[in-house]
Amino acid sequence: MNVLGIETTCDETAASVVMPGEDGRGRILSNEVLSQIAEHAAYGGVVPEIAARAHVEVLDRLVARALDRAGMSLSQVDGIAVAAGPGLIGGVLIGLVTAKTLSLVARKPLVAVNHLEAHALTARLTDGIGFPYLLLLASGGHTQLVAVKGVGDYVRLGTTVDDAIGEAFDKVAKLLGLGYPGGPEVERMAETGNPERFALPRPMLGRREPNFSLSGLKTALRIEAERLAPLSSADVADLCAGFQAAVVDVVVDRVRVALREFGSIAGHPTALVAAGGVAANGAIRRALTTQANEAGLAFVAPPLSLCGDNGAMIAWAGIERLRLGLVDDLTAPARARWPFAEAAASA
Ligand code: ATP
Ligand code: MG
Ligand code: FE
Image (cartoon, rainbow, N blue to C red; front, side, top):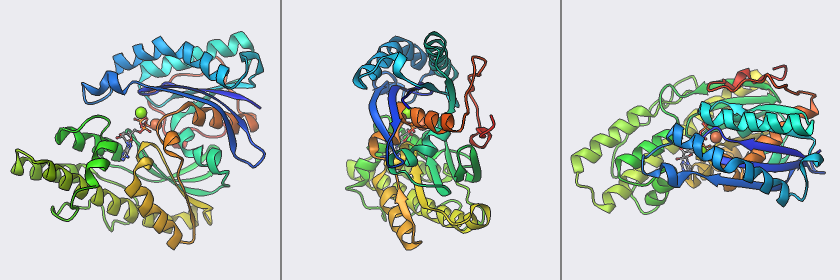
């Protein structure tokens, strides 16, 4: 089974062909990603109208190239999967209309995939792990702890009450005059900084529900930055190190609570999994590896190329759904909002 996956929900235009491997993992035959970072960098964030136009300009060629690199024509794929949300509606519509057209013309089944579900299932594509597992999904728009019990069977244990972790990294970077996206910039600056120079808060630490809150931490950092202005590069490095250390402490504490709740909801987890752009962060990966090992669990996080948005994860989610006979038709809607837990197997 070869599935073409299309992703246009945010600022990456991506197309990929994936087939199931012998070992329960996926085989990525091609994975084309065009990032629009340069187009949005001047604005310090994604501009929806610019994103939609950029998707239109490149998507057709990108799909052709993904098929090319996989060594096949459209007639040789067995399904067309597309991220139908959640995301910026202009971009989502472009991907969805493209996928519907291809599906109609080539007479191939269409699979409308939830973008978050695709992030969530990536650990099965890369490592072939079984259900259930505890997922930390942390990206620019989302921060959730989820019990992944099966395809379409997700129980959300906790979420952020304000900013997403990636969003907090982006805002901190902007505040400190670093580039966009902020996560990699803050991580790089943090390497040479002293994480203990500033006493930054750890919001939600010790709370019984595994929720997150990032805005208080961001505000505390802004107050320090304003007090010190103008900032030397050592100040910036120390602020980044302090911020990242606080995020790591919060993540570990929240995961600990979620692991405690997991058993009564889903049984014994096969692994602790991280996904989404923030899963690229080395400090978070190291902390979660230690934590998982202490709990006797494997830690699984995608390689960096599959942490951010990509078409391979959409194709893989398409494979998972097609195997269960879950197919969509041309009425599938584009959804700006689409809560993860609603991407049920019966949808
Ligand atoms: P969503 O998946 O919620 O719709 P999105 O598509 O913007 O949002 P991704 O592309 O998965 O999210 O991730 C991008 C986010 O990940 C950005 O906020 C970025 O700053 C963050 N990020 C990327 N690399 C790192 C890193 N090394 N450390 C921390 N954050 C990072
Ligand atoms: Mg992105
Ligand atoms: Fe994403």
